[in-house]
Image (cartoon, rainbow, N blue to C red; front, side):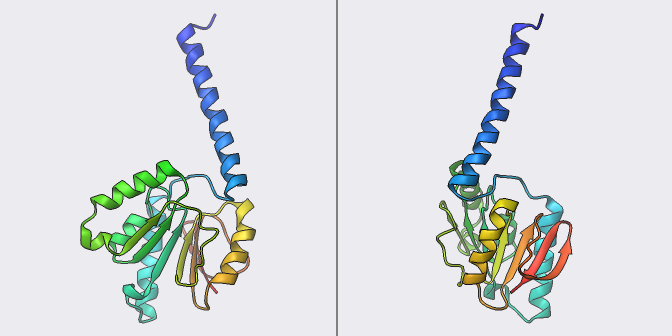
Length: 184
């Protein structure tokens, strides 16, 4: 016979798995968004390294990059970009993840924080024409719609950085550590 505390623990774990599944489905159909998965440190270093190399090679100043992180989560990519001098905007629809990201931004010095903006809303209604670097962590079911939106909004020469999921409609510049770099 299974002891009662062990049974409660198993029931709790089963409930957590069910809730996570329902959360994924809710986000998928309600907001056409991806569920939260953290980005690896090596991928963050790869993104920053690529942007620094690209800016040096093409005579860009970091001030000319207007970076948007679609689904910025807890700021795993956004905060290091800000610390490296990139002007960034983040969109996060999940209130809990937005709160964590916001607290991380508050801890930064005012001069660094001044080059960043964070919104708690869906990015689907936004126009991305004012950004020239798009960072996304798209899941398969949303990529087709997202690629169409980016094709409509972005100007020629914009950079799209996709973490873990390749895009088919854009010209591939490079791929390292599961990070795909594209241009329009």
